[in-house]
Length: 227
Image 1 (cartoon, one colour):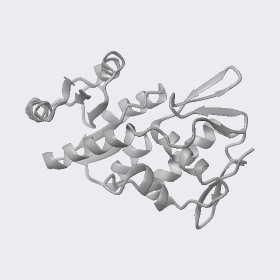
Image 2 (cartoon, rainbow, N blue to C red):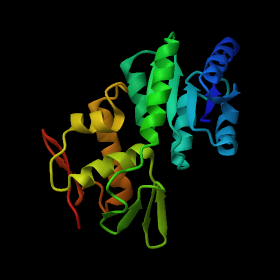
Image 3 (spheres, rainbow, N blue to C red):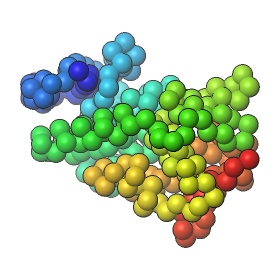
Image 4 (cartoon, rainbow, N blue to C red):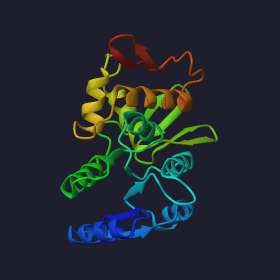
């Protein structure tokens, strides 16, 4: 039974979401204080987090940033009353997996949760181990190692890298990456792909500003070049 953590301070919304998610077969937990959210994630280890942006004591953007900086790859679906593109982009860039704005359709929210769980449970295909320069990436552990150094990778960082590696020396367009990794229902942007490429370079390239393996092909997309 998948565990859903709701981080939301509106009691009526928490009750409504809890009742409907339990009817769908989810184990549901909730926390209303942003300051307690990260500790709850650590203890509970949920399968997906529904995270409101506007919270008391600590906002959702900060919580998302904190979880990703600690290496947590738990899927995060941001919920907020803000609908401007800049807010959606910021949430995705901080590591959120999807984004809905209030008021939202319950059917849409349930569909997005199912889509997130479906995508994040896909085991990277064909590639058991990925080598990027001195780094060895274990896709199943979401971890890269180089000697005694270890670095955590998010689900989407691994999926983007996997796709590029499977098509080694080929140019892969941003749209291809968006459609395969996020799916057409997630509404990410080209900038989302660029952001994950930047993160991968920062973690795996010796000189992220002059990458040797994860290359930009201007006007076309990205290409992975092996050792």
